[in-house]
View 1: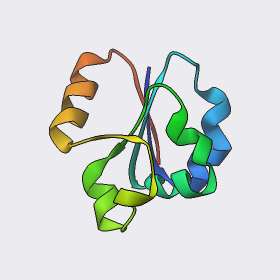
View 2 (view 1 turned 120 degrees about the horizontal axis):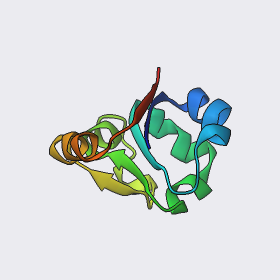
View 3 (view 1 turned 60 degrees about the horizontal axis):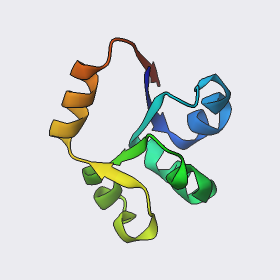
View 4 (view 1 turned 45 degrees about the vertical axis):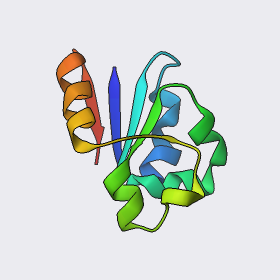
Length: 86
């Protein structure tokens, strides 16, 4: 399953519903979760949208794997189940 989070507080509140094999994508203000939980960046299958990191000045403040919008679309197309946390 693919989980998208657009707010940091939603990451904190709902990570318990994310299985180890699930992919987490941090979008929009969801990238701020990387500041409050640095271990999140080390979690396998966690990615952040590069443009959202850049827009918030966080590009150089995290070790999280990044993707562009094309990569996000590909992830969505390659996944049979998506859960959006908005």
